[in-house]
Image 1 (cartoon, rainbow, N blue to C red):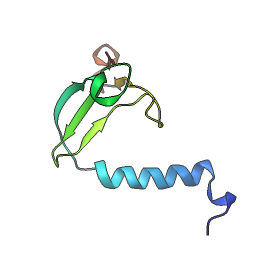
Image 2 (cartoon, rainbow, N blue to C red):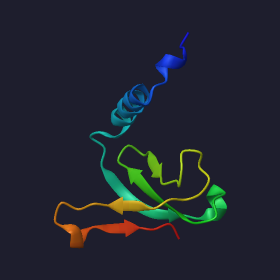
Image 3 (tube, rainbow, N blue to C red):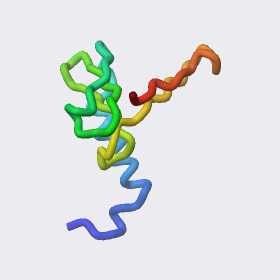
Image 4 (cartoon, rainbow, N blue to C red):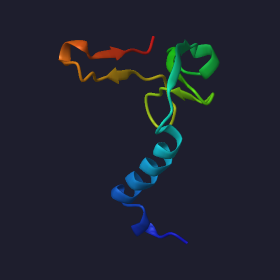
Length: 88
């Protein structure tokens, strides 16, 4: 059984990094759309990314799924090429 010392921020980061990497590394984004608020229960339409294996990334405002979130695209081509993809 795990005790409280197993739930450090560092350990939590390690666990979630490994889990996310196993699902995302090597995947390709093949689609982008906005999912309607009526379909998600959010107050705003949410950006959604479709991956090449049929999975989707739904962008949320927080880890509890309280509302849609925004995506910040940080481009290596320079600061004038970066953008925010907003919730609508």
